[in-house]
Length: 189
Image (cartoon, rainbow, N blue to C red; front, side):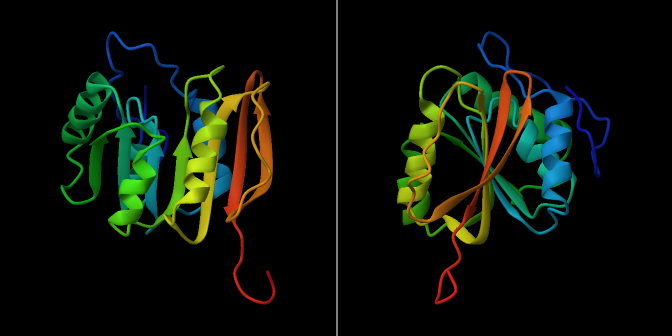
């Protein structure tokens, strides 16, 4: 898999071996970053990180930091190998081996706030909806956060959230990219 843009453009990253993951297609990843525009200075959280392609792409394009979360040891070791092979500076990333559904409580306790949250959970297990609800239940969003979810077209997500509002979606065959944005606070919300 290749990095599409930024400092590490065209560099290859490894995929975890012996792990059943479905990497985000390059065209879909490129479309997401075209939607997001400038990610300079953003703090990124990648849940179900797999190879770390989204977070690495964000760092390549100027994101301040990326936190990678995956519960599979082979995935976290692949991410570690990918950031080292690209010589991404220590301090601009964190790799957490944990369950994406439970990590939000830990991140809130550490007072972490993210500008972009990306997740690409396994299809057909209801994990996208469960993880979206988990993100909504914890205070880990910065003022203008976006949550980007890659999911199967038949997976339904919830619209009944406290701190997030549905923004839009894009379809790429059976893959849907749903985008939620943090609700504005204050009298004009």
